[in-house]
Length: 392
Image 1 (cartoon, rainbow, N blue to C red):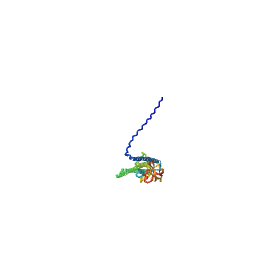
Image 2: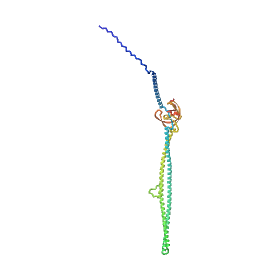
Image 3: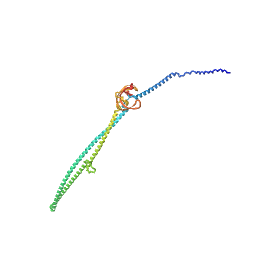
Image 4: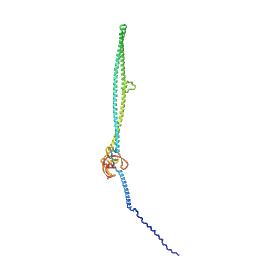
């Protein structure tokens, strides 16, 4: 038989968790009364952080905007006041003084060269005149010597013929007188005094003959001297120079030496004149270079500030096309904002300068202009030409 199922036991009941122990409320802390102040501090700290972050973001945005502006803007210029004690002005003044001193030195050298040239040309002219007159004088002396030689030679011939006649007449008279004296003496018709007188006359005739011979020798010697002098003068007056083996008289040699010294001195003076003519163009070129250098220095903008302050502005070449005399100048109170007209351009100064970029540490090439602005605006970092930046 089937057993009946047993009745099921009731499910066990889960016991309820024990209740947590009741803790006593902590005693009130002493600093709870500062909680409102702490909240204010935290709020202020958050606001300060937000303000600093906002300032950083605004500064960064301004920096980026300023860089972008100056990257594309072509209207800015850099004003400045150039004083006489500015190092650039002092440098230009020093360079002008140095170049002027060097120019004066070259000018003095050139004036000395001109003086030497005039002296050389005058001396050369005197030497040429002496040489020309020397030849004329030698030719005149040669003609005089030849004329004297002809006269002396003619006189020598005539004197020789007369001498022969006188000698023959004297000899004949002496022979006749001696013969008569000897005959009379042999006949004892002459006394001793008469014989002595006759011998004295014979001695006088012999002395006269010797005197005639001596004069003939003197005339012949004079003729020979004149012939030698004429020959020497003919040699030194010839177009060609005197050959080394030529036989000259002492006087002719001294005269020829004077001519040689004149020729040598003339050659030196000619070389001096040629050298000076070659140096003068060099001196002129040096003076021209110094004049150009001085002109460039005096055209420098800094030369304008030697006597008084110069209110000027540096303009880079990319910004220069918009600059001309009369162009308006604008200044801004806040970078390139809050701008107004402050002056105008007076003139563009010649020459080239270098300037620093207002933001980047780079140097730019450009020109300098003279401007008319109040002194306070001349010390600003930049001004703007023609219109306000961004047309604001």
